[in-house]
Image (cartoon, rainbow, N blue to C red; front, side):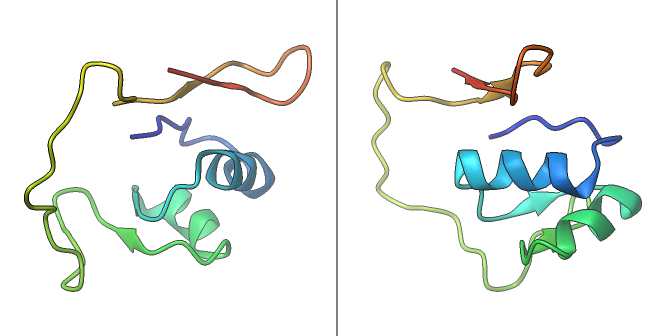
Length: 82
């Protein structure tokens, strides 16, 4: 899961998508419009696209990353923090 500021520009969202490897976004209307230009499948909050299926048989480990929060980027590009 990657947290993103809904006020980010398309370029800022593009950096998060490229850096994180995100493959699906859940977003409100305006951020979804910017994300759609990046070719990322978009789902409205509470809605999952029909072709997305839950993973089965996935065993998680304590050392795996569950969330990426990005820094503000005041000294450069935002960096993902585990």
